Amino acid sequence: MIISHKIRLNPNNKQATYLAKAAGTARFAYNWALAEWQIQYAAWKEDNSQPKPNQMLLRRQLNSIKREQFPWMLEVTKNAPQMAIIQLGAAFKNFFAGRAKYPQFKKKGKSRDSFTLTNDQFAIDASRIRIPNLGLVRMRETLRFSGKILSATVSRNADQWFASITVDTDQNHLPPAENQGTVGVDLGVSALATLSTGEKVVGAKPHKALLSRLQRLSRSLSRKVKGSANRHKAKQKLAKLHARIANIRQNSLHQLTTDLTRRFHTVGIEDLNVSGMVKNRHLSRAISDMGFFEFRRQLEYKADRRGAVVVVADRFFASSKTCSASGCGHKVDKLPLSVREWTCPLCGVVHDRDINAAKNLEKYAVSSTVSACGGEGAGSRCKPKVKPAPMKQEFNRKLDLG
Ligand SMILES: [Zn+2]
Image (cartoon, rainbow, N blue to C red):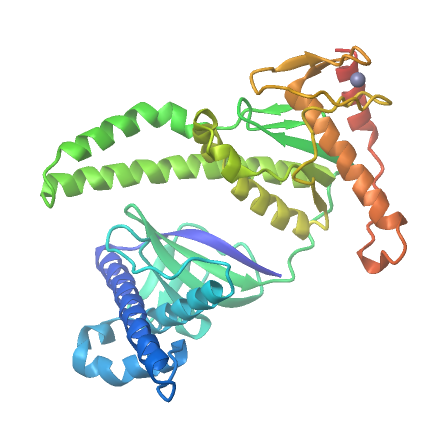
C-alpha cells in the first residue's frame, strides 16, 4: 500500500534559500516545457512528420541546452526540473483522458512552490532528510511508516516547508477496530459530524473564529501599493493565517477519522454532491471549512489500514428525509435545511435531523454489506456480515427513549 507522510521541515536560512531556488527551478522548467509543448504540438499539427511532444523528449531537450541557457539550474538537484516535466506529462495525460483541465502555467507567488525528489536523490536518517548539494535538513517528526521509500515532494506553505514522503508499506495491519460494529456518519453544517450513536462532533470551525482577522488582513492587503515591501509583508501575514486555518481544519478531521476507524469496522457515509451544495451561499463557508473531500479521503485510507470498510451511500439516498424508526421508513416530501427536528407523520417518532440521517446511513451500510455477501458470485469481495456490538445498541436505546 502506498501512503504519504507529510512532515514539517526545519531548514536553516541557507537551506530555506536552496529549497526556494529548487522550487523556482521546478516551476521554471514546468513553464518552459509547457510553452515548448504548445509550440511543438502546433508544429506537429501542421506537419505530421514533426515529432509529437512528450515529456521524455522535452526532458532530453532541456538537458541538452540547460548548461548553455540556464546554467543556474545546475545549482539545485537535477530532480527539480526533471520531475517537473514528468509531472507536466502526467497533467497532459490526465487532460487527454478527460480527467483534468488543460495544464496551466505556474505563477510565481500564486501556484504552490514545490519540487519532487526520486528515492535515489534523498535519504532519510531518523529525523533528518538528506538532499544533494544541501546536506541534512531537520524534520519535526520521524517518518511514520517503514517500507520502501518512493519519492518526496518538498513544498512551501506560507513560510513553512514540508516534505511529503511517499512510502510503499505493508504496515497497513493496524489493530482492527475495537468495536466490530457499524456506524453511520452524517456530515453537517451545525456539527462537523453526527454519529448514529447519537454523538455530535463539533470540530474546529476555523473560518468563523478567525474570519474577522482574515477580513481585516485582506482589507489591509488591498490598500497596500502593488509591488511595495508593505504589500509583500501583508501578503505573507495573510498566507500564514490561511495555513493556520488549514491546519486547524486538518487536525479536527484527523481526530474524527482516526476515532471512527479505531472504533468501528464499517462506516456508512453520504456521497455529498459538494459542488451542488457549495453553490448555496449560506452553506458554502461551513462546507469548505469542514473539507468533506478530505474527510472521505482520510476515512478511506485509514479504514483500509485497519481492514475496515467505508460504505458510501448512493447520491440520491434520502438519508435526512427518511424516518429511521425501526419498521417505519416513511419518507417525507420536504425537509428544509432549517428544520433541525421533525416528527414522523406516520409513526410519531421525534427525530433530531442529523442523528436520524446518521442512523439511516448506518442502516444503509449494514444492508449493503449484507447484500454484498448474499448475492451470487460475490466471491472474494464478500465482507463478513457485521454484527452490531452491544455498546452501540445501548446508545441507540438511550436515544430512542429520548
Ligand atoms: Zn416513522
